Amino acid sequence: MKKIIIGVMGPGEKATAVDLKNAYELGKLIAQSGWVLLTGGRNVGVMNAASQGAKSVNGLTVGILPDANQQAISEAVDIAIFTDMGNARNNINVLSSDVVIACGLGAGTVSEVALALKGKKQVILLSDDEQSKVFFKNLSPENIYVVESAKEAIATAQAILNTNLGDC
Image 1 (cartoon, one colour):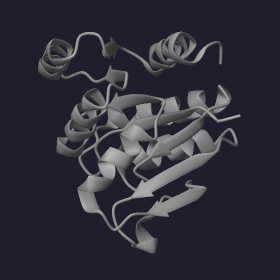
Image 2 (tube, one colour; image 1 turned 30 degrees about the vertical axis):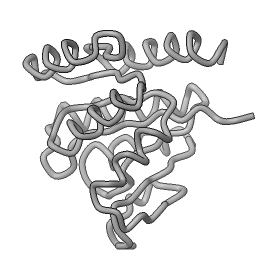
Image 3 (spheres, rainbow, N blue to C red; image 1 turned 135 degrees about the vertical axis):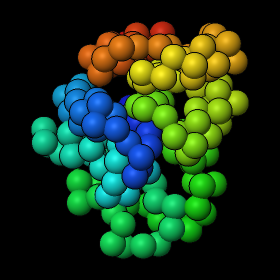
Image 4 (cartoon, rainbow, N blue to C red; image 1 turned 90 degrees about the vertical axis):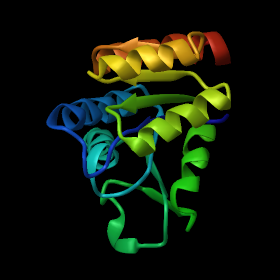
């Protein structure tokens, strides 16, 4: 049976302290739900924090990396997939995820959200940026869910999965 994959996308070097806290909690809750965490795999920002959160409770983590740099991998990534595709790997990230959670926003995250929406993926937006909430909600109201906490993001992901994949 296919495992549920939850993609957590967010800023790398420009992640805020709130982004990092939320990402760690998301990773932990995803693992505790029995799901696989998928991130961009690097050892910075939201990618690293979410992977560390999942590993803190023995979760399975996958990192889709933009290049072949072995030193850039988060030590909390179990399965590293090297693409040598740069930002084009963002499409792999979102299309491989059953649900995408955007934790904070940066240019790369915005591209991932847009690609997810284009691919008809459900996106949960956990950000304190009011303008982006309005923008993405207007862009695809049926596929964007705005939440205020990691716990709410996980409850929303579970509801989406129950609707889309049957009782998971």
